[in-house]
Image 1 (cartoon, helix red, strand yellow):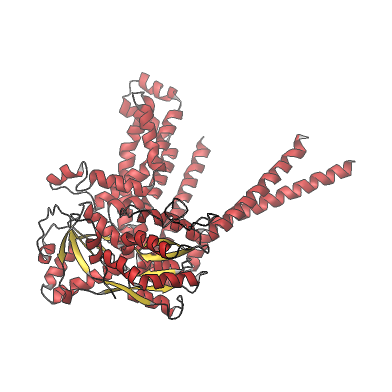
Image 2 (cartoon, each protein chain N blue to C red; image 1 turned 90 degrees about the vertical axis):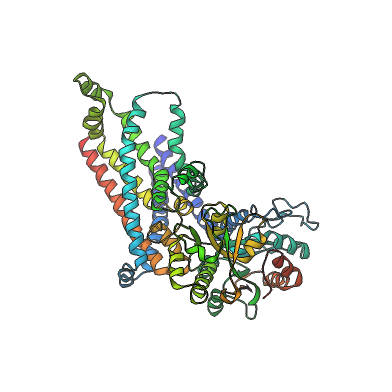
Amino acid sequence: MIPDRFRLRNYRQKVTYLAAGILIAAVTLYLALPIVALFLRMTPGLFFATLNNPDVVSALWLSLFTTCITLTIVVLVGTPFAYFHSRYSYPGKMIVDTLIDLPLVLPPAVAGVALLVLWGRVGILGMYLNMYGITIAFTTLAVIMAQIFVASPFYLRQAKSLFEQLDPAYEQTARTLGASSLRILTRVTVPMTAGGLISGAVMTFGRALGEFGATIMFAGNLPGVTQTMPLAVYVGMEGTNINVGLTISILLVIISFGIMIAVRLIQRQEAKHA
Amino acid sequence: MKETFTPTKLALIGMICCLLFVSALFAGCTQSTTTSLATATPTAAPVTPAPTPVVVATTAAPTTVATTATPKPSFTPSENNIVVYTAASLTGASNTIGSSFNKAYPSTTVSFDLDGTQALKTQIENGAYADNFISASNSYTNTLNNEGYFVAGSVQPLATNYIIVILPPANTANIQSLADLAKPGVKIAMEQKAVPAGTASLAVIANLANDTLSQSWANATMSNVVTYETSEPAVAAKVALGEVDAGFVYQSTATAAPSGTYTTLTIPQKDNYLQTYTIAVLKGSKNQAAAAEFEQFMLSSAGQQILAQYGFSAP
């Protein structure tokens, strides 16, 4: 009796391990192999040679420039927004909550079309700006606006939930000591949630860097002005220069890895403090 | 009891997940072409209000007499359906071509995968399934032909097209001639240089610069380009929206558009670039007979008439 049962359990356990092993290997390979293939398609020599290609250089700098501006705006505007949003209740708060999440589920191409029909030269608001000689569509500003629209929810959601979860006792203590709202935000709330905020910001940065659909719709595709790295990959792979496409893809993979490692390190740091 | 059950459950769940995963992988492999089609076909629909979109036959085709008893999903490369990789500039004509062909050959339906020829070429080179290829570029056709993708002797000239400049009807930039394209502040949309229409537009600008206009005109015009689109219809769309002041497109686009959509600036034929469209049957086609029929139809007077109706010239 006992050895039988033991054997059965042992067998079941083996099946479990086997199934788990296959599952983990399958998922890992499925996610990792495409990335590996990307690196295998390029030789290091060709990669470094293509790095000097003017299209690669301009796309890289444009992407870094626009995503940095996007990130700065999102953090500077998003932090106080998320703070007030989480601290006060106001009519239509549910609607605002939903709108924050909307760009996450909205196809980026749709976001681009929506931005174009609002801010474009004949758009609902754009036509008035056009009277004053201000054009937004097909400029670097359009790239940034598209990135903010698509990528800001990552930071806003994170900041909102961090502020909501923070024990109100800290802020109340600060308030009883006479600190102003701004001072509480900058001296208490933000420092206490800094780790989470940074990882939210990093995710926003990553999403903005990868922005494609809204950018090509709203900002167009002009090297040096609106052609960001993902657009340069697309154009390169369409046959202009496949090496450019592959090189930028590899660059983006490296940057993405950097982003993920940064988030991991911040989260570990966070865990230590907690 | 709990202890003995949990691992079994786990194993079961794990195995089911594995099965699902593997089947998803297979499904992903076999359907990669179909998904691209499913997304590509609807884009064709809204452009022209064609009679009834019989192209995707299974969804709604009450007009066809000879519908087969078992309605197979038409977008899979089955025996009754051919997949035509088609240059995006034929977007407008594709619905009419599909329904007319289906009337002539009731047992075969046509699915169009419409994109810039340069993108289609890359897709074919990377293993995409297609029965026919309609290219807007001789050079891409030749490349693929040399790489051995086409059935020998199937590559035929299909139509020709010239470049034209279209302006939004409002014409707020007040462009009256080709020379005006160089005025400061004019916004021009063009195809990127790998798009056949982009190659042709660049050639046209160079020809004009050498002939009636100047190199400084060409430089100023090029610096007025605000976007290099990835297909010809995308340029037409930006002009139709009024977001740019001018766009370089094919004559067929201007001809086929409802009157009042664009104002046009014609380019003298001596400076223009004759774009030759070609059609071919792919070697990898599982339905070469039907694909050859489609090619014959396109080259026949019926097919040529449709192309003429949409502004394409005979080869």
